[in-house]
Image (cartoon, rainbow, N blue to C red; front, side, top):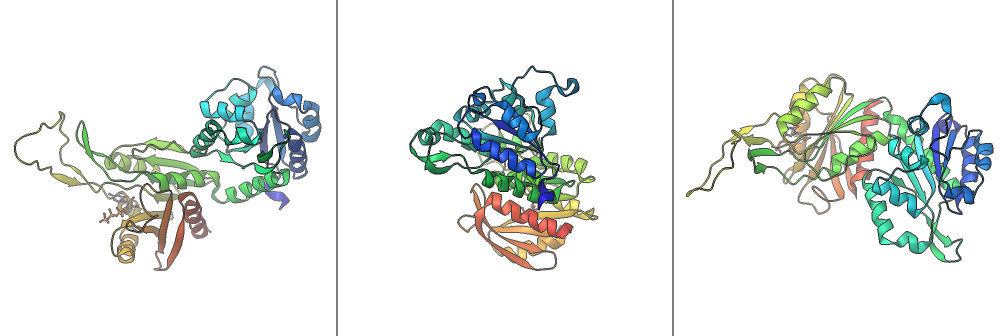
Length: 400
Ligand code: CTP
């Protein structure tokens, strides 16, 4: 198992908390696994640990000051941000979490965090009242929605004498977490993945459009997980209120026609396409330039058929993997099987909108995976993030 971490670059941001002493143990453990460890210390952390301790444990220079020159004239925070395969902030104080959530970059650690494209893992440690403070909790959920990963603190006796949740996770736990991150992330490395998500909007006039209830949550979860597993991900998204996932190239489109054009530009180079978007099948024949004014009788809007994007992709599938979604309200299996054949898919993720806990806007889903050989796998109710991993596991099995 040593190979999993060997040669990987971890950047650890150490903040001012007594749990900083535990990060010395963690650094020593990771060094024994042959990781390359860079350490940025905040000024406050130097009140708890001498930089020389980390320097001796990692055999690397410890960085504290933004304006020190080093690394052959490289700009340090950019250099470290690019070099890292993963960034860990431990112990993470309420202060650093607040700064990241607010987009503040005023020292070596926060500028590096702002500049990195690597996954960021945060291990908080603080007094339990501070941890439960609703402002901190709001900051944590804001960051989670953007793809930052949190290693929850545990309950126990805290340095201040209180007992409660706030102790930083043990070094061995964090070491295992980092190992499982790299073990899992390897399986889509080098693959180009296109994910589509959200609804499309088809304009009637400058103020009205036709759309559906899709929120994009499922597609965004897949894009985020694929990036964590090492893929290069283009996420083509219809209008949603979701934050773009970390480490994903998000391209915003409005209409089915635009989504079609964008995906066709990228399709050639893709290895895997996962078509989570709820594409509008029809669009108004004409979009009027001016707002349609109310008149006496009824209004009829003539609709034209939009391109069936997935069908078009299926015609030139070659050895790409194509995954579709099917939203049904009746005859789930028959309809979904028909779509697999017609659109030339490897499998389809089918859900019945009438079942509670499945479908649009929820954080969970209940689906059946229907494969091109006719086999069916029933997946129980679970979070869209967990389901994203199962869908990607099946993609990886087909790849292999
Ligand atoms: N899809 C697409 N382009 C369309 C319609 C659908 O690419 N114009 C894709 C969706 O992204 C999804 C799959 O096709 O992955 C199935 O979508 P769905 O709406 O369930 O099926 P339709 O083919 O539109 O058929 P129907 O609406 O009759 O169920």
